[in-house]
Length: 441
Length: 179
Image 1 (cartoon, rainbow over the protein chains, first blue to last red):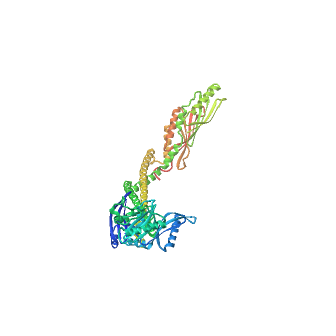
Image 2: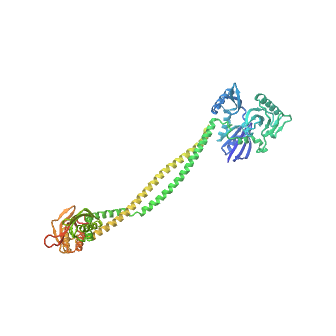
Image 3: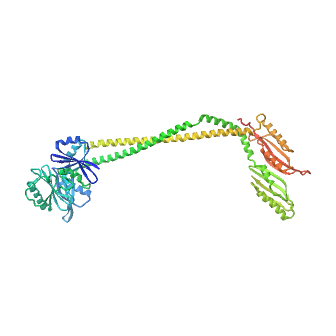
C-alpha cells in the first residue's frame, strides 16, 4: 500500500489529488483546486515530500518520423537527432511511441510518433518543487496520461479534453497517440465552435494521416459541459464509465496519472533529475542496508556484552575459589626439597626391587616333577630383572626309554613353570646325567 | 541546485555508515576482550587444577616420607652407616642358623656403601632354605644384592648340601632426609 499526491497544472488552475494505492484499487482520499499563486504556500505547508506531476504543456513539438529498424538504444539516439533537426529544439526531453511500419523506397521503416518539450519548461516546474524541498517522482504530459485511461482500442478514437479554455484533441489508435492538436476556444465546455474545430481535425486525420476516427471521446469536465446544437458527422461518447464517478470528472487529469502502466515510459523528467532520483533511491536502499546491518551488529554486540558479563562473573568466582597459590607453592617447594633428601633411599629400593624374586623361584622349583630324578646342583646368577639358572643332575631310571620319559617329564614341568623358559638342555645316556639352562623373570 | 535534495539522504547514509563502522569496531574490540577473558578463565582454571594437584602431591610426598621413615631402622640416625651394615650382618647370622658369613672391605659405588658378602648356609630342609633366601631378600636397609646362588653338595666326605650366596650388602652413602 502506498500513498501518492498528484499535482495537475491546468492553465491557471492547479488540481491536487491525494490517493492511496492498494493492490488492485485506488482510493481517493482528498482533492484540492488551487490557484497558481496559492501553490507555493501549499507546497510549504504540505508535509509529504514526493509528488507526481501532470502538466499541460502549451509549447511542445510533435511529429511522426520514420526511422530504420534498429536496436532500441539506437532508435532513441536516431529519434533525438531527428527531433533536433526538425524542431530547432536544443535542450529537450521527449516521449516516443512506435505507431507502425511503412515501406519507403523499398526499405522497411518504423513510424514513430514523437512528443518533445523544452527542458527549460520542465525545469521551471521541477525547480518550483525543489525550492520548497519537495521531490517530483514523475512528470507526465496530460494528454499521454489521459490516453492511458483508454485501453488498447483497435478502432481509432478522437479524444477531446479541456485545459482552461483550450481543447486538447488527440487521435488514439491501438492505445497509441497518433496526433495531437491544441485548439483554442472562447468558453469552457464544448460548443458548436469547438465541434467545428473537431470536424476540421477529423478531416485532417482522414486526408493526411489516412485514419478515419469512428468516435469522438469527450474526457473529463467536457462531459458535464456539453452545449452542442450542430450535428456531428461521427458519434460522440463520454469517458464517464466506472470506476470514475462524476464528482471526479474535474480531476480526471491528475487521476489518470495513477492509472499509468509501469511499462509505459511517458515520464518527461530530465536525465539529470532521473539520475538524482535513482541515486537517492540507491542511497536509501544502501542506508536501509547499513541500518539493518547496524541493528544486527547491535544485537550481536549485546550478545557479546552478555557473554562478557557472564565471563567476568565466572572469573570473579574462580578467583574467589582459588587456593593460596603462594603458600601452596612454598609448601610444595619445601616438600620437594625434603623428598630429594630421601631420593637415595628410593633409588636403593628401586635397585633392590629390580632383582627377581629368588625366593619365589626356589618355591617353584619344589613343584617340579622329579620322580627318579636327582638334582645335584642349582646355580642361579642374577641379571637385570632376570635369573639365569642352571640345573645339573642325573636320572635314576633304568632303561633308556624310562630315562628319557622321566627326563622329559622334568622338562615339561619346567616349561609349565610361570615365568620360566628353557634355553638349552641335554641328557647324557652314557652316565645318565643332564644339564638344563633356563631363564626366569 | 537539485543535488541539494540529496544532502539529507547523504547525511542519513553517512550517519548509518558511521554507526555501522562504530558497531563493527565495537564488535571487534568486544570479541577480542571476550576471547581474552575466556583465555584468562582457562588459565585460572589451569592454575586452580595445578594448585589442587600440588596439594595432592604435597600429601603424597608426606605419605612417602612417612613410609620411608617407618622403613628406617630405629638406630639409623644414631649409628654410622658401616655400623648399621655390620649390625645387619649380625642379624643375618643370628636369624639364619649355621650360616657362615665372609665379608671383605667396604666399598663405595654410585653413591652407595657396599659390603661384599659370601653366605654359606647348610641345607637340611629345602623349605627352610627358601625361607632364609626370602629373609635375605626382604632386607631393605641395608639391602642385599644377590649376584649368585649355588646349591650343591659340599666337597668332602660329609655329603652335606650347602647353599652359597654371593652378593653385597648396600645402603645409601648419604644420610637420608638430609641434602
